[in-house]
Image 1 (cartoon, helix red, strand yellow):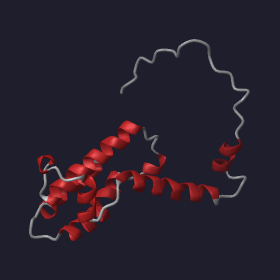
Image 2 (image 1 turned 135 degrees about the vertical axis):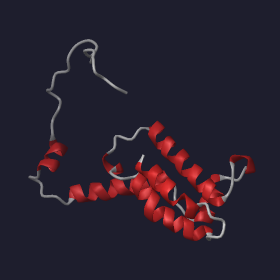
Image 3 (image 1 turned 60 degrees about the horizontal axis):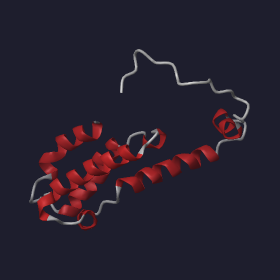
Length: 137
């Protein structure tokens, strides 16, 4: 949501045909994408979330380039022209960076204790889970 706000605020610049495409790509990488991926290393990301992020990103890149889906230009070509890497790669990078921070923590740190947590003796309840009355999706 925050990424969309940043996009709307900067759309005057990003959709201007007089501004070079590489400069638009740099601006997008510095302002819009970090807002979209804020805290992504901690998200429980599913495939549908991943695809929604990629679709939103490609819409923005197409719009910046002045192209539509009807022009039938491949995403890779648009990314290459703008100079932007795929969203999945950036999420993976941020998660690996976060993982590196965790691995460098001392072994007695609470975050590291989760690694050696033994859940073999934890009993799961029988049957289906209880219905939650205030669940919102």
